[in-house]
Image 1 (cartoon, rainbow, N blue to C red):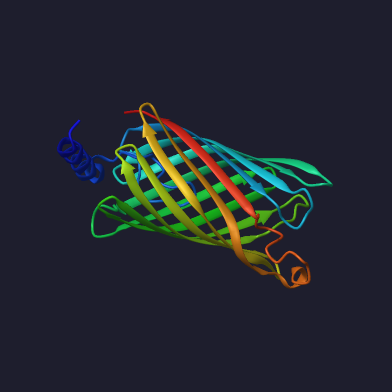
Image 2: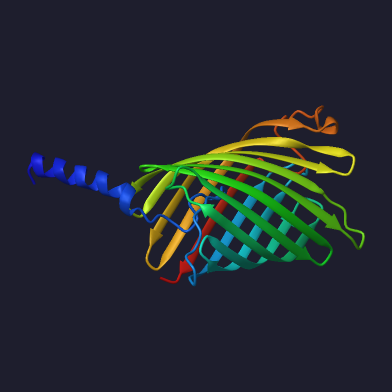
Length: 261
């Protein structure tokens, strides 16, 4: 192949990427965007999220989500899922299962002046109910996707269970379309936790994210590491300034789905 033809091929590929990029139904591993399913489409999804290292020695937590997503009307999708958590430390092991309903509304999309969306989630377990509201903003600039999230979650417990009652999360993410079927990105996250009368700490994360779309499957993969933290008062005397009670040192998320076309 001549150098001229090679340059022409590279140029055509570069021009085609922003216009034809499919990427995944989820553009980032942890950050939501205004990408919603079209009306009448369905998607079976699996999310697996391992989390490692907190104050407790040997701590690990793995969340598994099995959900069905449906395009309800234009700009609105719904999810119904079974969420299961497997938590371990040196002293105990526990399994927690919840049923979750989620609505993801995106009246303005990223390809316009700016994308705006709202996510509402409710999760019910045997002794806990959690509600979350998440604001979503994003912008598509050629092959570059920018996304901003801000969320608040509140939990209520009964039957003797105790736990963190309030969580705040903010994220800022950027991704670049490297091929019609793939995006690579970087996610910045901030997570804060509170229990009644007690501040649990704030963790700052950064890590890469990948999104791929191949018929008939899409998948995302992301990993974040804690790079800074603000500890609760009772944790500030420890020798590990990045170890918190409710936020892990490292997180990984793999999600994949099988949409109908």
